[in-house]
Length: 172
Image (cartoon, rainbow, N blue to C red; front, side, top):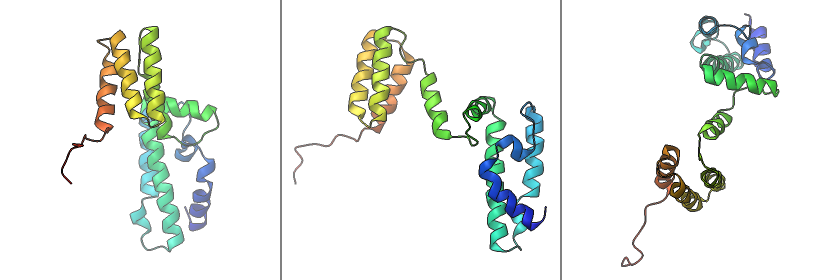
């Protein structure tokens, strides 16, 4: 690829999905994804462009990062599935924040109506930054679902986010 084509590809990255970037069909198996990634990695490895001017080095670096991003998403079946869903919504890049939200939503949370209510409250409070209220909601949920591992692990996670208590009666 010549320098003009490299610059053009760099400018087009934001309009390309990962399949197009790696020159793959959507039905490509994992082995084809790996092969396409390796080919592109060799073609756009930043070390091979050290003697070029800044514009080319920046363009190649940008392409290499996007190729790596594409590979990280398409090689993982669950990320790939999420990416395909996002493509249906017109999103061309993978959003790790959306993945985290999807994982959180996939937690079973509560199994009973009241457990589900307290789980949803805890998630809402946490997103709003009110960790103490989220903890209280989880504790209430545990009164209805004593053995729920999701409640217990979320409770531990949130307790770790709280600052350590200080002695209010310390000598100043």
